[in-house]
Length: 242
Length: 333
Image (tube, rainbow over all chains, first blue to last red; front, side, top):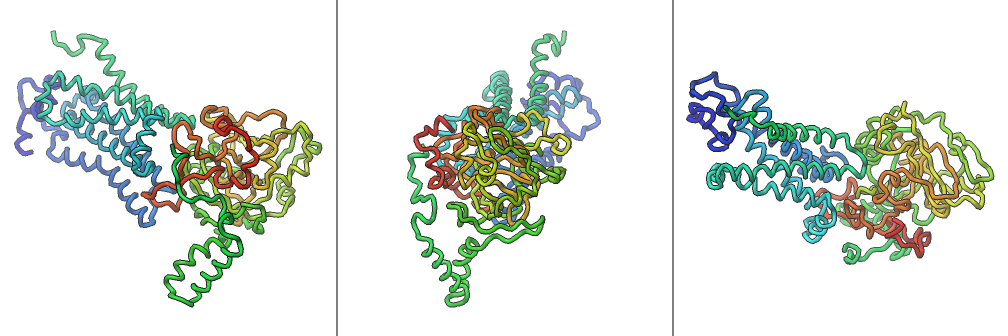
């Protein structure tokens, strides 16, 4: 950690950071700028703890409900399943927001946090699935498989989680090197499809009750984040230097 | 399939296995144990359930009293443990006050339940606008402890106070054309903040076939837990149909119409493939998005407990099964 701060920011995250051309704009000369707060050695540990707070709260609620103390409402199982799903979507939005924010706010150091947010998306997605298969399905494997096959909204959610798995497994630096940056990047673009599947899962889940207010919020956020990328693609020569 | 799985020794009503005087006697015996005849701790533990079941749940002392005598209608008094008052009144659906299950308790304080009238209209010889006070005196108040199964997969046990809807129906004398009963509920945007949201067509309308409405278990309810209904549970008067999913029981009713054609009901209009007109509790017919084979009893089934099997007609098959004899319940869900 100590060592890292003295290195040029674009090298801090190894190959991940160098994938993004925007980064190179920072300080081509390598001259030291005033050190941003985002590069503080404690920034990552603090973010890590913050990302764990929802999980800690829900775990505390689950454990205390065993002892008859109810912090999760009258139906703790439903609260656990839904809250973890909500947090998966929120982390997904946060992960997708890193690149646009990095460019809009001219804060290249934000890229340091993208991997952690992505992994927390996967983490909350796994806890969401675990809660569903445990609390809703009682770990009855045949019931779970039948449920996934029978219900499009479960199938879509499960697909999103399955598609996220290779991304989580190739998130470490050596995997990036082994795959080569272009292939790695192509693989990780799956996240756009995952975001749409997750949104569809949420939409279908709420559709039965015609309750789309929250779905609309997530749709707007994901729409902006993906739309911004699409816009960048359609408009060539945005970032290419003459 | 769930429906083929042997879920053990299931009986609709306890009296199918055990004669009444025998189980009453057993409770008596347990009380003797509790009095100290044998190992005090064990006896207290053993009798706890029996005592809880035999006694009428005590009033929470939150609202005006509305006492009822124990109902003699078959199936109207389940021996299961009533769900805590806080859960019954703090976790439910009442979309006029919001779509979260905590919303009704939070928002329903604005509902004005007096003055209140219920108009009886349509194919009846004696149409009439009843004042709430008239309705309260129309029949003797009974206490009935019903299971409630929500279409979402959770369930409760609730001690209601009211009388059979048939008492009212007999008085208004339906004509031969009255084939269905339509319940129209309050839809006042001034006191109900979510009326006007596009979630459902307002007012919330529900309906029954005439023979269903005449069934003694179809309860016109005015109270729960020995007190008048809290606003969030459908004050001042609502239906309770224990063999159907909860949403069939309209809350805060202002109009009861007797009609010839099947009325369009709120959820059926909103999602025809998900919510049928009958919506009888049926573990063999899944909701398109989840199984109806099992349920979670609020406040009772532990977080990690396996969900309990849902019973045909919510365990009221012995009482209401004949209403649907010969009907394809997969088609008429």
